[in-house]
Image 1 (cartoon, rainbow, N blue to C red):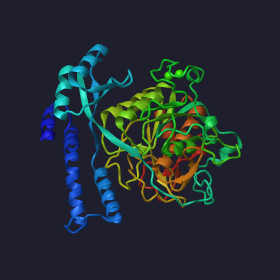
Image 2: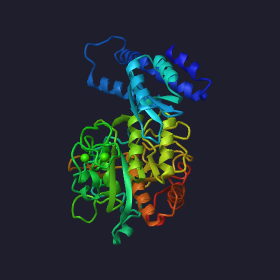
Image 3: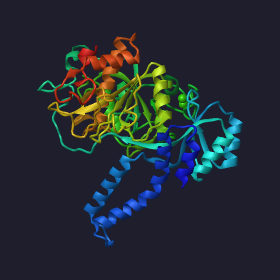
Length: 460
Ligand SMILES: [Ca+2]
Ligand SMILES: [Ca+2]
């Protein structure tokens, strides 16, 4: 009923698909307990046993996750509001006290508000529309990291140098130190373990904060003590990584090379900015994602690496990526791990057709597409290694991980190198060059746009 009401409210202002998403959003939370009950009855043959066996619980959880993955999942009681015209601080405080909403502003360029409320969605919607000049309201969709659990050990970093030639041709560049110069790479993820011995030298430093006072926003950018970046899931703490995923991605882009320890990244020398928003479980929402992107761009990142995604289409996220492009930033997205065609069954941000978005599939060591990797001849542009990839991990560790999450950072590293060597190229030109110079692979033909593997040497 709530969904139907909202759909009728939206009909005049939105496309049908948006109304459908709202319906989906408001109908799914109520359906989840019913889905679980149906699944339990199915698994236990109609009799509710006192204790479900472990395997049944695992299957139940996997099925539920799978079902949830098919639907766009939203955080209940959270909304993203785009304003037509800005609202004064006093009016905003009044709205908060009148309504009981908790409201946070997005970046000044975004005209966004992030609204939290336990009231019924249609009440929230009505009050916001009455009090503010609203362009659109969206649910705050969930997103998650794009990796897979894996624990097998391989002895080398095959993505950079592989005995059968299936690699990104980084090794030939390593005769001279590979640097991204002044280019800052924003890692929007679970954070980065900034003290990791293989990363420390390559972590971006906000000098004003590094030389400033604790508890004070020394550079006046709106973020207190953002010495190496900011974590929107843990805003009170110095940026770190409690999951390991972000640190793994950071090491693929820029693990310090030639320092006799651990691993080397695509770039031996770079500036990695931690724009954290995914929590210790690798989960987050678009509210954090949009803030992380805007923050990275604000601090000068020209490459945004995004190894995460979800199925909810959001105009606000699309606009954040467009804003990054307007500032000259390339956005590199993991294609996702559902082994599906994202031209037909989109995943975001991977499926946004924007001139500054490069979407990356994962290949295995022998050159085939990884079994889990999403594809799409229109929306997936290039492939990179994404199976048993060795890189830095949380604290001071190392780990092998698989996923398109691992593939995207290879491309982020290559893009940063290209931007440093060719500052004249626009994000759209960089993207075209990555596509044009990819190494053709027979297993990728007809599955992704370039039909090939990113080629660091060729792209330069
Ligand atoms: Ca600051
Ligand atoms: Ca400070």
